[in-house]
Image (cartoon, rainbow, N blue to C red; front, side, top):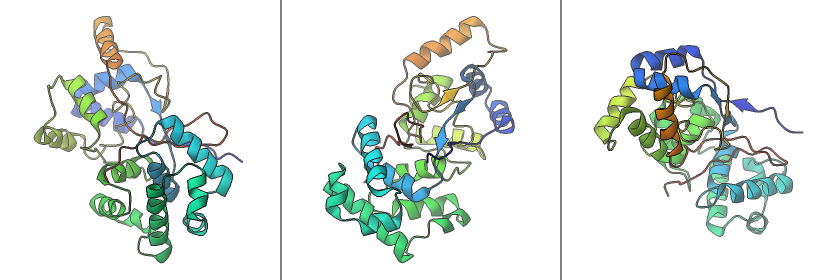
Length: 261
């Protein structure tokens, strides 16, 4: 039975806060409208999906993930520990990734990593814990914190799509660490709560497969401004990695992973 999809939670309060703190961002959010991006609260399954998606196309990732669901039913630490290396390789997972998945499962089952207990830790502590797992780097840990754990204030320096969108909205030639830190302070405590409307949404929001945009009236923006933002969106690069709803037989939450090893 297919699970009921869940979406990244944010509301008018967060949007209003971000728009007040950054009027240019507010204009962009008004143009884009609301975007619903699916999240997966099963942190271990989301973590394994990240590992599966490293260095491969999203379509291949979805195919392999669906094979895993067909073969194992659920992607749990117990299931991954019980299956053989050969069984994982037979669904299309490389030898190295098998080691990552098995290693993560072993640490969870041994109690070395308490995934449920992460909810009680600070963002920095969660990031350190997740990025210490095999095959998971800081960038991937931050994506899991955003699109599985729904942590409200994650703005990832390693996400090139955020750099691109900040340049697009604020007309910067490049985003330096100092400039990024300024925007992170500005958007706190809603660094990731504000992410669904702007971050990744400026780049072809209807064609990236990760969100469903609701129709919105572009109130307060003239036609020239709307066209300017639209042209900028067409020039956008890679969309932010996120958990997306797929149209395949089984539900998938495909992270496009360029994980730090």
